Amino acid sequence: MTGGASVPLWAALPVALLVLLGAALGLTGSIGLLRLRGFYERLHAPTLATTLGIGSILLASMLFFSVAQTRPVVHEVLITVFVVITTPVTLMLLARAALHRDRTEGSPGVPPPLAPAPDGDAGI
Amino acid sequence: MSAVVLGWSLLAAQLMLALAMGCATLRVLLGPRAQDRVLALDTLYVNAAMLLLVFGIRTGTTHYFEAALLITLLGFVATAALSKFLMRGEVIE
Amino acid sequence: MRRLLSYPLLALCFLLLWLLLQQSVSPGAILLGAVLAAAGSGMLAVLMLPKGRLGRLRLVPGLLRDVLVEIVRSNNAVARIILQPREPGARRSGFVHIPLDMRNPYGLSALACILTATPGTVWVDYDARGGTMLMHVLDMVDEETWVRTIKQKWERPLMEIFE
Image (cartoon, rainbow over all chains, first blue to last red; front, side, top):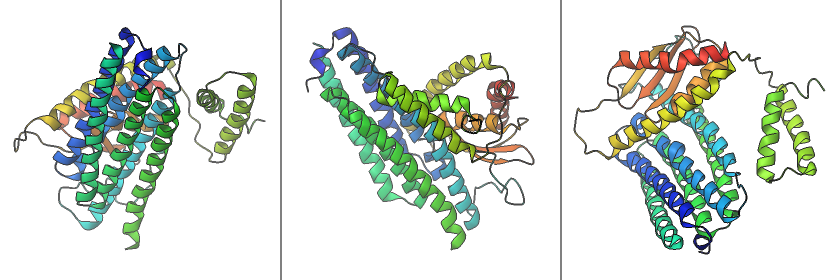
């Protein structure tokens, strides 16, 4: 609880706004997880949290610690890099897994395989 | 003044993120299918990382950063492994 | 040595990540980071990744800016869709097939990452023989529009960068 006092107001305001924006986006994404119908629609909901949501909180954290410690604190970039790299991979893997399961079960509303024979990934 | 602004907004952010984790947990419990649960688990990980970062700002220590980094990494590995299992498990059945 | 440094760009990225994690640029940290980066990129040489060739690098900053703008815009759009009251039949989501001219694997994976990272679109599948990509769209207004947008907005700059 000691952090807030050591930062001037010009830094505290953007930090507060960025944190609120990030948290609101995270909450919106999770609400979407509950409200949207069907798995493929829900697949879009967490991207709110993983792009702009965590991005603005990381920006707020960078700003806060850089001002509070009077030196550039940029190791939050690491989390940004990891999230940017890993989120598309997990979502694509999940989408492919769900599509595969739906196809083998013959669920309606699922497009048929693009190629007649199973082939490899496009280097992804 | 800045302590008041930060204190209230960080508290609000923590509440929102806790609510977000609650929503994700509800989806894990509701399902209805395995891929829904895995997706919700992934969202839960991201929300937890965000909550830890907000905790870090609130307490003014950078120790929470390492925890958030670990959670994002573990979340990725867990989700990748689970989706691979969803794909392979079907073949064996 | 040649095998160790077969991916100089990747090794440099590893070194930068290490320095960020250590939060220092002391000689010791740089030395240890260089050793780790060489070892890490050398290990990746075992995978025998296909050699990529970069074309017009000066397009990269503009593309990154476009991606950022698009992420902000679609965050707003998807948040609106989630929070608006539910009206049956007003919005329809679905799969879109998109024929692609790009064949470079790195360009394709970059396109996949861009599409999946923007809320509202998820790359699902790709057929290497026909060059068709399958993606899922949350708010499908018109299939034709999506095909045109993706080909013009993302595929063309990526093809110029990677081919």
